[in-house]
Length: 209
Image (tube, rainbow, N blue to C red; front, top):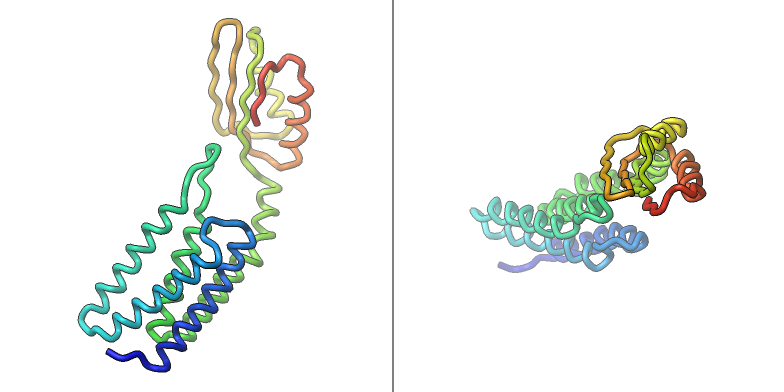
């Protein structure tokens, strides 16, 4: 089984495309950055080239690439402060592997179009995503105060006055203190206004947001 000039070109193309995508991730300080995505792209291309030269095992090798990338993606996703992070990077790892496989199979036009679509999703849609998050985002709040009748109900009314929707709420009392935790949805501006009010509230003994 000998490598041909086209195989080397495929690997170089994978290196370039993986490098472009990896640069974007590196710029945003993500866990899978420049070197990782280059290796994923080039590795997928190499496995695909090998699979096309081994005849009957081609489908099995391709399936194993997808399985292996799934494990890599799962390692990138984790929970942080009640949020799941790393989903976009894991998806990019998956797409980068697919691009490498496409190049290895000689599907240059399809791989290039897919690369452009993926790139546009990362660059052009980022401002759209920021705009949506500015208009509607979910934040978690926890406060503790001295227990009084309807203490937390008053705070829930306060949230409504700031046009913040309560998605989830939990309350518990410990001795003379009462704790409340809420997930609130609303605009970034309303969240900032609420946070400023709560920070100035002398009745609140503890506040997390």
